Amino acid sequence: MVSEDIAIAERIARRVLESGGRTFYVGGYVRDLLMGKEIKDVDIEVHGLGAQKLREILGEMGRVLTIGESFGIFKLEEHDVDIALPRYEKATGRGHKDFEVFVDPFAGTYEASRRRDFTVNALMQDVLTGEIVDHFGGMADLKKGVLRHVNDESFPEDPLRVLRGAQFASRFGFSIAPETMELSRRISLDSLSRERVEGEMKKALLKSDSPSVFFNVLREMDQLDRWFPELRALIGVEQNSEFHGEGDVWNHTLLVLDMGVHFRDMLPNSYEFMLSCLCHDLGKAVATQTIDGKIHAYEHEVKGVPIAERLIKRLTGDKQVLRYVLNMVRLHMKPNTVSAYRSKIKVTNRMFDESVDPVGLICLATADGLGSISKYPFYSHEEFLYERLRVYKEYMSRPHVTGIDLINKGFVPGPEFSRMLEYSHKLRLAGIDKEEALKQTVRYGNQLLKKEGKEICYEDSTD
Image 1 (cartoon, rainbow, N blue to C red):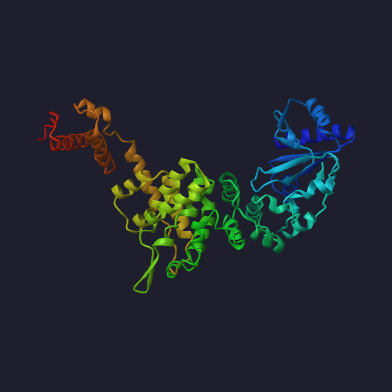
Image 2: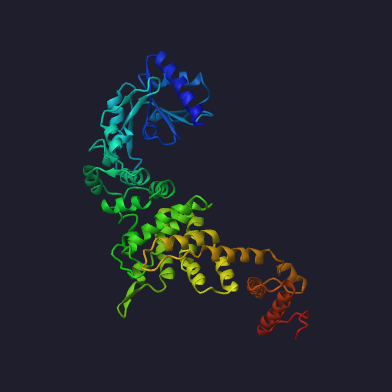
């Protein structure tokens, strides 16, 4: 679709030129093109024509969709091209919506690019001639791999730019100019919505080969406290150097996060998985203690659950994301533990049964091991765990006791009925065949009824 979008952009540019205007590729399109990266979004800006004339030209090519006419932004149906007129904003408050927007088709390329966040994003390219317009040294910064803000006055007006800087640094391997770093330290992030914060973090987690850079940049900017205090609390929390030569829990967490990238794209819940890598050891901030001269973090996986819950709820209201992350945090120690002790099948079956994503859990445990610099060679437990996962799935495919089976035996749905189903499920995990499991479950159910003073089921012929 990108080639079709470029074709329509060129068609628009030719008509604009005939009417006395000029059309430029802008923003991430130019940056990614010059970096040799895959182009996914095509954005163009039309100069020298009013909104009405531009709408007329677009109308010749298809149905015009107005996605922000007051902002001078249009689209064409069936084409994924953002078509904009030059504009500039003036802050009227602290919120991200507190802006007054002025559309000025005749402002010129300097003023149009001056409103951009970073010099590498302020580059423009003539759609028809390919000429690069660079008013702020973006080409030089792109070659050096430097993120530098365009304007001292406008940059702080949108605090999201602090997070965007960290996100770009993470995705593209850019450093941040000292003056931009200093300015970013002085910008409050209080007015940002959680949706915008999560959006930038999500790009770093899913699009970067080194998502740790996102959080390290925020740390360098002293910008962790408002949105990521639970991560900030990991800085300086010591670990047993025998198993964690990488240093404190902060270093370990970010190593695990980067190791998680190796598994990210193979998992359907890639975002939730990466968040689990980020949150897996949050409990060490409260569980770490020194006993007999050795550092331990007993039960950090359990103590980390409410801490992870606070962090995730601050960033998103998605209950599925929350459920996934908390489940992974609670279970993340188990795979390597059961593997080390070569636990029985019923133990690994219970572990996988508790997990919202057994494959993701194995991947998290592996990333956790790879993110630790130990004096002992790392031994991957993947082969053992995947074999046990195969066994679990085979057990789950066998015939098993159902609610209908219990009703046919004369039991009535209720509190005891639910407990009977839980009991039969444990027998299923232990590999008990259905016939024997049904007998044991009926016997268990009658014991429950008898204890409550209720009439037992005559089908229990074993008594």
